[in-house]
Image 1 (cartoon, rainbow over the protein chains, first blue to last red):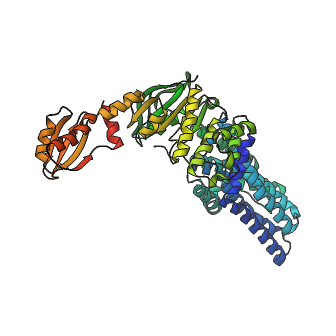
Image 2: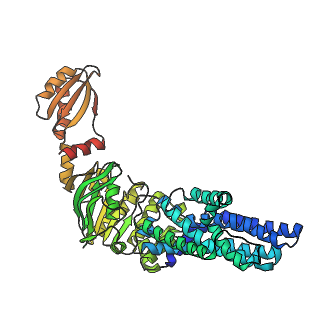
Image 3: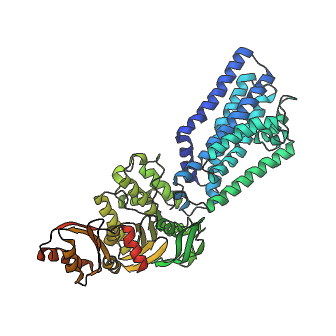
Length: 239
Length: 303
């Protein structure tokens, strides 16, 4: 279910495009914020949790997920170069699982690692805040990657839809309508973080069993469906 | 020896019928798929390449359905029309990746690059390649596993004459080796130079099939229309209509010209200047009025 050649091509495609700059800019911004907060505000567990929850998990992780998830397959489908993968005796689900693996790895490296570092800068992992958000970022990386990879497979407007989901649904809508939060990757990840961090620092609207079930279910369903879509993919630019 | 069978295949996109009840059999040797732009050639090739399911009918390789079977790509090599490749790779990296996806390695990739004579530029990024160079690297990627079937969609587009000759030689060689080579083109001369067997597609329909000489004859024997202006249109008309090579002449008053329908192309082209000279009529304009490829093809459909 993993093809190293597909993986190599995907890594180069994701990291080689101009969009990849966002992969470096966002973590740099997070670290800058962490340094600034620590310098001017000192150590405060609640502030650390707010920064990591409000920027790292709510904004940075989904955005990096969009870039890595859609970037792992979308451009290839758009320009038709995916034909070189499809015209090979390689199972379509293998292509999807490999691309998902790459998207997850990229999202984790560029979101979870900076989250951990920022957490240590903010309060030295006091009350396990850094660890809690790192775990949340890791888990969210998986679900976002799967969702946005599917989006990249089914839509030419994957990046826009992904951004709308990440920013409007998760951030804005989720804060206004409580029902929307049940269907939010961010909330599922937070429910894990809630268990790790000290009492009352992190809150989630979704119970842990529900969150885990939804995380696993959504990831599996999105991956399976993307594999199916790829099997019947119509190449663009036909007469 | 591989044979592609297209059996009453149709393909439509929404309300648009791209391929309409086409049946043909493509066997070893070089076959040219000829038709004007938009005739459905790419759709047909995409069905043969397993990228599209026929809406009705069947497309199979040696008796096995092509659609949704990844294993057919052990037998099939595809050179798509589209330019897009992995531009951030070098030519060599691209062909090696294609080889690896077939479970092969660097050795086979190098051989394919040598076959298309691209070794000299193999370490340059594909982004820097000319159209002809891209075409050859695409070709190498399709040849890397030595497929028994090679499908090429408009392979000569954008190639200079020398590159065209090279590719034609290569395809001829592959055909002679007993591989099934199918390429599409909208240019008759291209197909004529390379393919002994031609399939003609017009407006999604299978218009003609067979030896290129027969098809060439069909194309030249069709009625030709000419617009002719001369120093004495009526005298010229009277002299021409007595010859069996003309089927009808109209005096177009508004245009101040003759509209001539010729049924015997060669005879008429010889007749017209001779008759004019004999009657001391000066020819001012002689222009074919229906030489577009589309009209040539539509005549074939009717034939």
